[in-house]
Amino acid sequence: MNPDGERLDGADRAWLSLAIDPVTPADAVRRRARERVLALAASAARGVRCADGDWRGLLPGIEVKRLRIERDHGVETCLWRLAPGAVIPRHPHRVGETCLVVAGEVELDGERWTTGDWIEIASGGDHGVVRTATGALLMITGEPLPVFDR
Image 1 (tube, helix red, strand yellow):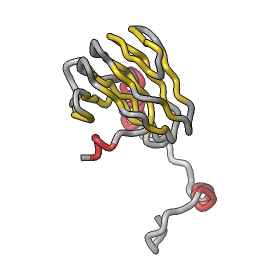
Image 2 (cartoon, one colour):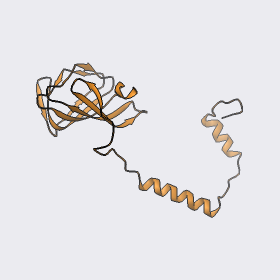
Image 3 (cartoon, helix red, strand yellow):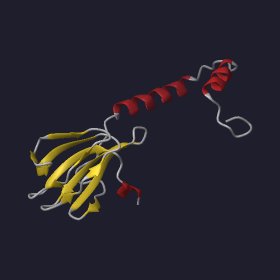
Image 4 (tube, helix red, strand yellow):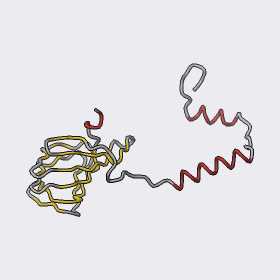
């Protein structure tokens, strides 16, 4: 930030970097920095364990658990747990949505989708009612759900 509290833009930062003489860090500082970078790189894998996370009620008979959110892209990936007889009403999609049927089966627009099936809804599209007679577990990537804002 500059003295007026404003953020410096890219051009200001570039000019400022030219005015500063390079400094070679001490060996101990370089070693610690290298160890931290390597530790971060080694732990690049991350995830949510099955028993972890927070299931939230979304609709009657439907719970969701967020696995990942990409705020920059406006999408999240969630598990959807549908009890037998659960219904997801018809709704539009501002962003595209993908759905993997992890377990069970659902019916969408007259078609039956079962374990391992992949469904994709285009951005700006919508789909009919989703129903399950047996119950299902879905992994859906789409726009963030308001249930996680509570």
